Amino acid sequence: MKTIWGWTAVGLSTAAVMSIAGCGGAPVPNAKVASSEAAIRAAQETGGRDVPQAALHLKLAEEQLQAAKALIRDNDNKRAEYVLMRAQADAELAIALSHVAKSNVQAGAAVDAARAVRSGTPTP
Amino acid sequence: MKALQKSIVVTAGSVLLVSALGCATAPVPQELLDARSAYLRVQSGPATQYKPDQVHEAKISLDKAEQSYVDDPGDQKTRDLAYVAERKAQLAEANSSNAQAQSAKGQADDDAKQTTKGQLAQARGQLATASVQLAGSEQKLEVEKKARADADKRAKDAMDRLAASVGAVKQEPRGMVITLSGSVLFASNKDALLPAAQERLGQVADALKTQDDHKIVVEGHTDSQGSAPSNQGLSERRAQSVVSFLVSRGVPADQIRAEGLGQTRPVADNTTTDGRANNRRVEIIVKPIETR
Image (tube, rainbow over all chains, first blue to last red):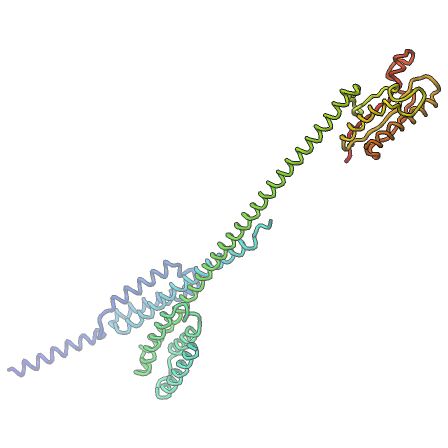
């Protein structure tokens, strides 16, 4: 009797392990989904769509976020985590690229203004 | 030196990678190749100055991808890590560009500020110089004005004294006219000045010397007795005598001339003794020179 119960326990725990493995063997990466979504929103808000280079990476981030969500639905959480890392990296790059574009415009304006001040020197 | 050391490390790393590649069965994924070249580019660019921490992070990401490739060359995970590593390198590059642009803006702003400051200082300097010059010229103007007023007063005083002593100074449209009676200046039918005349004419000369910038005409006039041609000649000689005397007393010769008008301009009746006496006269006309 004791051995039967022992084998049953072993079998049950094995089944439990198998079912976890069936779920992708990893928990749903909720934190990574949230941080990727936040980075994408930030990229959109910094005008990522208006700067061509930033827009490219923003689009890649959005596509990868959707792909990761599909993977999570298919229980492939492990793969989804890596795709979310890609999405996050692209969104962050998009933010940086829109900042560069803005700074370049401001720097150009400042240089022009300085030149104007210099050349507009009121000659006595 | 540091850059050289770094490039040596990179070269050594590449050699190791190549040897690792030799052992690996699967080819190096495109993502890893991209990540390596992106890191190489960043690592030799300005990002090492502007964003060294982010360059370091990119290196760590690349190392992870390389490790994953060594551990399991065919794993999808290697591609993902390499993809992230390439983005990290690009991020460092972008943030470095951003910092450079901001620094350029700061410099340009400072430059503009300095230029404006310099222009302001220059303008202030010019203003100060102009003020000093203005004060100087105002003072000079004041001195000139006073000198002119003094000269005018001296001239007027001289004329007033003359009028008081000679008694016949009139302001007419043709100028200031000093009339001297002929009988006081000359003996009858003569053109030599009488001794008494010299004293009077001396006063006239003193007054005329104070009248700068004036033209002086000495006119000789006679009464109608005798022939007109002889009167004309007499009036000319008498006018010339007066001019010569005045010049000898310091009146500038280029300001004075003589003119004989004979009997043509009587001022009184030639039929009476008194009238004829009045007509025998010398007029000294003092006019301001109009065109200087």
